[in-house]
Amino acid sequence: MARARNIKPSFFANDDLADIDPLGRLLFIGLWTVADRDGRLEDRPRRIKAEVLPYDDCDIDTLLGDLQKHGFIHRYEVGGERFIQVVNFAKHQNPHVKESASSIPAPDEHHARPVQEQGKAHPEPEQVGLIPDSGFLDTNNPPNPPAGGESPTTPKRERKPRIQLKTFIDNCRAAGENAISGYKPLLEYVEATGLPMEFVQLAWDEFKRQFGPGGKDEARKQADWRRHFLNYIEKNYMRLWYARVADGGNEYFLSTQGLQAQALQSNREAVA
Image 1 (cartoon, rainbow, N blue to C red):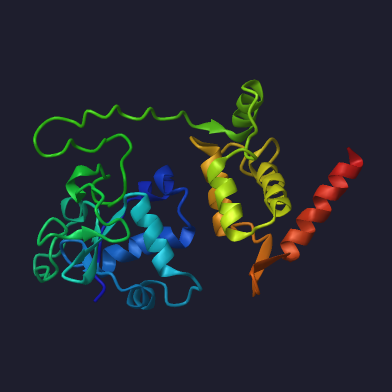
Image 2 (cartoon, rainbow, N blue to C red; image 1 turned 90 degrees about the vertical axis):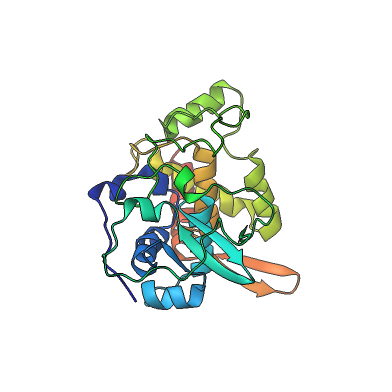
C-alpha cells in the first residue's frame, strides 16, 4: 500500500544522484511510498515495478542495484528472504502515527547478509549522512564513524574536485594521458560485451559534443569524467546502437541516432 512521504526541492539538484538513470531516481522516490514506517520492503523487483513504474520499460533489478551501489538503499537477506532498507529512512521521514509497525526484520538483526556482496561489510543506515526529510545523501554531512568511537584507520580517500569536461581533457593532455582509451574499466566492459571500439569512439565524440565547449551541457561539472562516460556507455544513454543475440556473442548495429551521429562526425572531419 502506497503512503505519503516527504520530499524537498533540493532532491532535484542533488548531484550524488546524477550518475543514476532518471528512472532510477524516480524509483528511489517510489520506494519511499511503498516502504513501511521503518523504510523496509520486500526485495521483489517485479512487484516493485508494478507498484512504482508500471508503464516504463526498464530493468528494476538493475536500477535497484545502482541505488545500492551508490548507497541509497541496502539490499539484504534474512532466512532466505530478500529485503530492502531505504538508507536512513526512519531518521528522516515522519510516518503517520497510525501507520502499522514494520513486520520486516531490520538489516542488523538475525544475521542479515547483504545481497550480491555476501561477506562484505556494509554501512548501517544510520552511518550514512542524509539530508533530513528527503532520504538522499548529504555531501555536507559525512557518515558517522562506526560504533565503538574511533574512525577506521584506513586513510580517507581524497575527494576529487568537480571540473568541466574541457578542463579534464586539458589536464589529461598536460599529464600525457589519454582521456578514455586507457581507462581499464572501460576496456574491461568492451571486452566483456563485445561492443566495437569504433562505437565507443563515436559515443565519445558525441559525449564531447554535449559536454564540451559549445555543448548544451558545457557547464556541467563532474569529479570523475571517465566513470561518467562509462556510465553513458553501459546504459547506452545516447541510444547510438542496439544489439542482437548471435552465435558466439552479441552483434552490434548503429541505430538511427547512431547513423546520424556518424554522419555528423564525418562531415566535421571533412570540413576540418
